[in-house]
Image 1 (cartoon, rainbow, N blue to C red):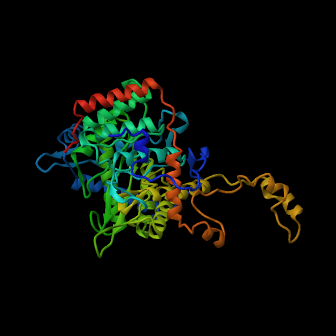
Image 2: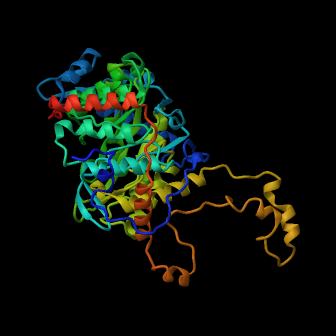
Image 3: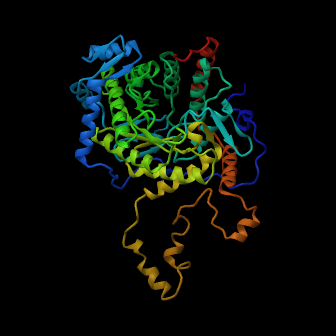
Length: 516
């Protein structure tokens, strides 16, 4: 098997690169984004409080089924009512309120490169890539099972664009046995990027391996690691009202290690949740609070992000639908609930389209705007998501990067100094004149406006004479050029050697199977 960092690994199945647009220059102002606008609302404050109380009632009366006996024991020790026969855990609202008060309102995810730290608070905005897709897709190779080559390419693409703030599980490398897969994935993240790594919650043994790799890369003692959030995981509840063993144990493992967990119910209105968006939000809120309570029971002050992934289904087929008006309303509502309990909020960029086409573009645009006007602090699946999350698309990744960079520009402060008013230029151009040659324009034209990496603004003749390529075809040229010019960030040779030694040793020992 080729190493993720090797030339053979990088090229994989791709043909030699064709002439295309160069990779976008790094834009450091995209690294720490802040939302300057007031979030939208879909509920009045009294209805937000009513929804919160309704969710607390669900936890008190109906409870949540927890499939981990160890997690149930922790709940019981904290005062929750636990029925071992059914696995149901009922949480008193006083216990939930106590745990909510212990959760930090702001914290920072630390990179091994301090310039790439990510703040998580009520105005910060950060983006992560598509994660967990079993398949990958591109114009040349079509749709196929994800490999370690593809996974490593996803890390490279994330590293190449500053608007992508953290790493993720771009695709499942299905050519790697599951018991050692986590070793290869984290090794690729730590050797090909200096951004914040992602870890799956697939059992305590696998999590421990991943934590040790990250600790080696960061040069942290076990005690320092517990006090330095530097990786994150996604905790998904099984809606309605089930917390399975790997997720429950993952909550505890991440809490005890002081690492960030984003507790995210997946509630589809009409399928795994009530058909109303308000009902789906109520159920999701209850499930998130149940997970947060367990995290704070395990370690008061554990960093937790309020996650949401609520949408609707196509009532004709039962298939998930994304980028819908209902999805946008659910995002805005979830943002209100996250702010109500004072936690950073995670949302998503999702589409049900099966190809990088017009449908994927407008559904993603709806999803991204819903997240941002709703006040999202972390947007997962922000680049590359296709086919309702079943595929990671190389071309879609680049199309999304274009959108994200444009949105990042929208977040930049508007210049409104006296000089920005351009009074001298207006005088110099005169009536019926133009501003191309004014001193005001000449001093600013090089970086006055956003420079796209995909959009083609030439006239029809110039565009058709250059091959009449679609945006998707142009995006293919960008990702190939980006991978071809990629250079991994510097890594201390001793650290690289230690990481390789750990990966090799644990692989030879058989790794660790995922939790059942």
